[in-house]
Length: 197
Ligand code: ADP
Ligand code: RBF
Ligand code: MG
Image 1 (cartoon, rainbow, N blue to C red):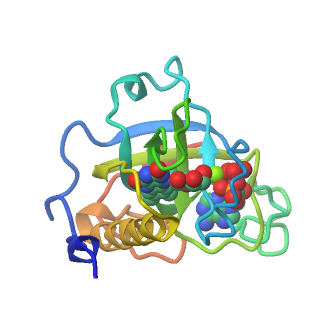
Image 2: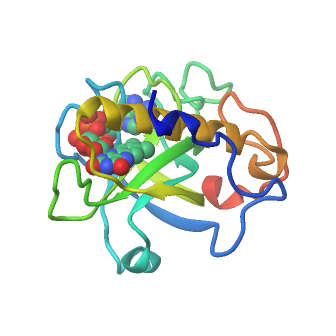
């Protein structure tokens, strides 16, 4: 129908991420604009944009990035693999779990925001919210610049293609961490920073 459907689904070299990637970012999941992105089927976990914590973000091109997110979920969260019910030891500490992600950094021209936001759509279906959870991000590549759209449907279509691009591009061995990806296989990417204590 539109040109967007012709977008390539695998981007960046098979050999793995290239400079300046990987880029790191971390923070606590905060409330966003409350625009009901959840109702659109695309919830986004917002992180504070603070150049004193994340120096590279000040000069980062606004747009859509892909990579991995790790989350330290409370042990009571249904998606926590270190929940007391699934853990053999009651003294074990919670661990970061890795998920593929796609994210937007920018002003969301469709909504004409005046402040820059960083929002992450985690490619996993969660049983419940995880506001206040510590989150780490490993950005591995840039997908596209942010755009304005004539209608919400066109924005949603493009975001769904972004998800497809991220999923397929991250599925290659040099783009998959050695361990720790929830529901994922193993590859040769160094994901140690995402899960370190
Ligand atoms: P807000 O405007 O507060 O960011 P959203 O509608 O974007 O609200 O929903 C974001 C919240 O949804 C996240 O903070 C998180 O707690 C929850 N959530 C559930 N599933 C996901 C997911 N797959 N990716 C991102 N956030 C999710
Ligand atoms: N907003 C835009 O205005 N233009 C975009 O091109 C755009 N691309 C996005 C891509 C992804 C992968 C995600 C997760 C969000 C994107 N957004 C974009 C932000 C979107 O408008 C925002 O998530 C909702 O408004 C909810 O805050
Ligand atoms: Mg959000």
